[in-house]
Image 1 (cartoon, rainbow, N blue to C red):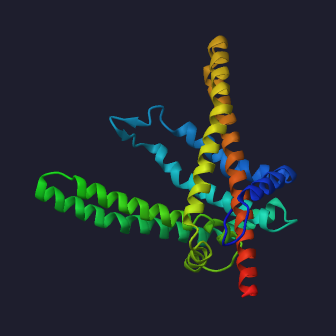
Image 2 (tube, rainbow, N blue to C red):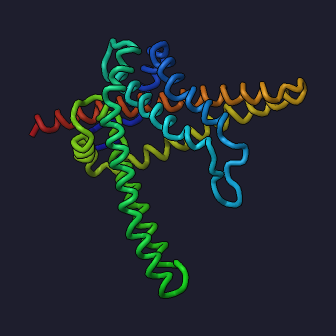
Image 3 (spheres, rainbow, N blue to C red):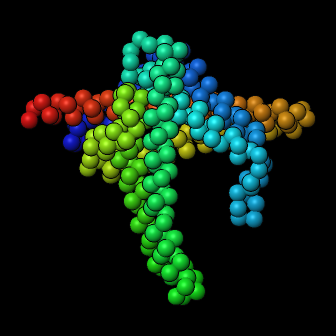
Length: 270
């Protein structure tokens, strides 16, 4: 329970499941287009050995990372708009998502800039310590951990920022400020919520995909059509992942709406 806004997180989960079940015909096209298909393409172009000698394999596949991120952003904004505005069509949700993409990209760039700025003092500490002791050690590790905690705190405060972007018409910076004001004092609850969601997503993917991949692998070996069964396993995995991301997007959209309503009600009661 988020006490300051008096919102039951469990009740929001129930509402999110109910909404996804009721609106699956509208959510499915957006999920497949923006989450599923880009994930399939990424899986197909990604090298079999992603990490070579302790480093990520550099190659043409990286050219798909930015388009994949843009599709994901479009899906998040569109599904949020569909959740927030009752009765709109898939086309209208996509139009809303496209119209809010500039603000979303601006916020993403602000987040990237924050990471870069936060990395500068860590690099300075590492350089100074290396010049004194010959290698980066405890001071570097402490600076790194402090920056990591600070960025994690900021990320949790901005958890509903995409929902705020999709449902408002202000610029990116104003949306960030409004989201930070809305989540003031709620970073621990947001962190707990995200951890529970990550664990749940991991368990669902493991329970569904480990047996499925094993079955597809057995069929592929038995029939000699390993390429086809690998593709089918990728498609199934992408569908499951898209469904999970869609549920999370709907949940955050509903949570944000309730937080805004509760904050407005609290102001009126003062």
